[in-house]
Image (cartoon, rainbow, N blue to C red):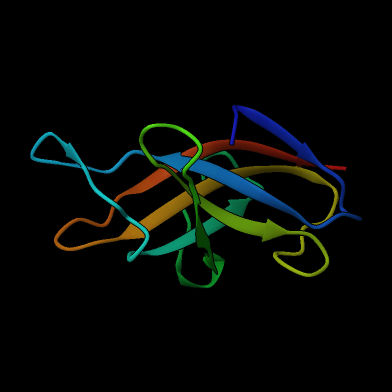
Length: 109
């Protein structure tokens, strides 16, 4: 997701975040990890248990090396958000690390 991504509340769209997973200087495939997303209406809020939504993975194999994207479906068939500005978060559950990162703003119109 870019710094400010816009979607219609009427559409179902994947919000994607590129994930570069590196171990010992080598790219690794993160798609076996659990990924979750949260969208909060307050910039200073941090996600808690009920804020998280299950995500999935997408792999782009069109180049010489695979590119991995964490994604979540936003819209009537996915994470339902009313019109407004949201601050996105992603969590990747790996072992021993579980990074939690802000991913930018999502504008729902």
